[in-house]
Image (tube, rainbow, N blue to C red; front, side, top):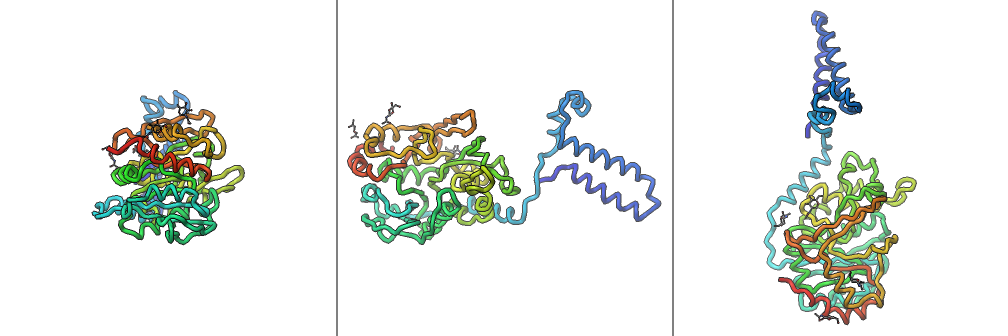
Length: 396
Ligand SMILES: *[C@@H]1O[C@H](CO)[C@@H](O)[C@H](O)[C@H]1NC(C)=O
Ligand SMILES: *[C@@H]1O[C@H](CO)[C@@H](O)[C@H](O)[C@H]1NC(C)=O
Ligand SMILES: *[C@@H]1O[C@H](CO)[C@@H](O)[C@H](O)[C@H]1NC(C)=O
Ligand SMILES: *[C@@H]1O[C@H](CO)[C@@H](O)[C@H](O)[C@H]1NC(C)=O
C-alpha cells in the first residue's frame, strides 16, 4: 500500500534542504525550497481539513471539493511485520488446493456447561450415519454422564467459560483444535446444549459439505450494540470500517478453521480490547465480533453472512426466546424450517431491518439446519415430532 504522495514529496524536500546547509554556495535556491515546503504544508493541511465553503472549493478546483481530495491516493499505512506475516499465512492456507479426502466427515462440536439435554435427539439424528461425522464435547463446568454411544469419551480438555468473555472464544478455538486433529473432518459445526437439529442427517451433511462457503454470521450494525462496541485501541490492525457483528454459532470449512487456529495477532486485539466492562458504559463481547470481523477482513466472499442456527429475537429482550414444551408443535417446526430469508436488525434508533435471501451456491434455499434455544422439557415433544419435521423437505 502506498503512502500519500505529499508525504513523500515533503520528505524529499527535507533532504534537499539539508544539503545547502553543508554547501554555502548553494544558498540562493533556499527561498524556493522554503516556498515549496510552505506550499506542501498548506496542501497537507487542506487535504486533512478540506475547505467547507463553495468559494474556497472553486479556488482549489473547478470541479468542487470532492474532486479536490479524490485525486490524492487514499490515506493508508504501512503494515507491521506481524500483519505481513499473518496475511501471508492466511493467503497460503486459503489458496491451497483442496485435499482429496475419501471419507469426509463433519465435526459436531458441543459447547456446554455440563449435561446435554438433547443427547437422545442427537443420537436419533446420528444413527445409521457412522463414519460421516465425529462428536466433540467441551464441558466447561461438569463432566456429565453420557447416555448416547456417540457422546461417550468424546470430551476434549476444557476450561471455565464465562458468558461474553474471551474464554468463550478460547473454548471455540480449543474445540476446533481437537477436531482438526482428525484429517477426515472437513467441516466444523459449533453447537450449544440448547441446540437441536432441524433436518435429517443427510440433508445437513450435503448442505454443509457441498456448500462453497462457511456459514459465519456477519453484518454491519452502526448502533450501540454493534459499532458502539468498537474501541480505537484495536488500531492499527482492526479499523472501525471493518468491525462486524454476528451470532457465534458457526459452521466452517477446514481451511477457515486452520486460519482461526493460527491467528494470534487479531485474536489478541479482541482479547484485550473487546470485553465486558472495557470502558465505562461500554461492553464488548468477543464471541459476537471476533470471527465476523476477522472473516470480513480476510475472506468476505468465503462466508454466508448468516448463521444456519435459528434463534428467535422477536421478543426484543436481552436474551432470545427460550422454547418451552407447549411451544414445540409441528406448526412451530414447520415455520422455522420454511424460512428462506435471513434477517438482521440494527441496534440504533432506526432499527433498520436488513433482509436477504439465503443463497446456497447461488440458489435460494431454506436458511436453517439447527435451532436454539430449547428448554430441556421440550425433549419428549421433539422426539415425537422429529420424523415429521425432518421428512418435510428432502434434499434434491
Ligand atoms: C458477505 O458479505 C460480504 C461483504 O461484507 C460480501 O462481499 C460477500 O459476497 C457476502 N457473501 C455472500 C455469500 O453473499
Ligand atoms: C407460524 O407462522 C404463522 C405465519 O407467519 C404465524 O401466524 C403463526 O403464529 C406461527 N406459529 C408459530 C407456532 O410460531
Ligand atoms: C459459490 O457459488 C456461487 C454460485 O455458483 C458463486 O456465485 C460464488 O462466487 C461462489 N463462491 C465461492 C467462494 O466460490
Ligand atoms: C406432520 O404433521 C402435520 C400435522 O400433524 C401433518 O399435517 C403433516 O402431514 C405431517 N408431515 C409429515 C411429513 O408427516
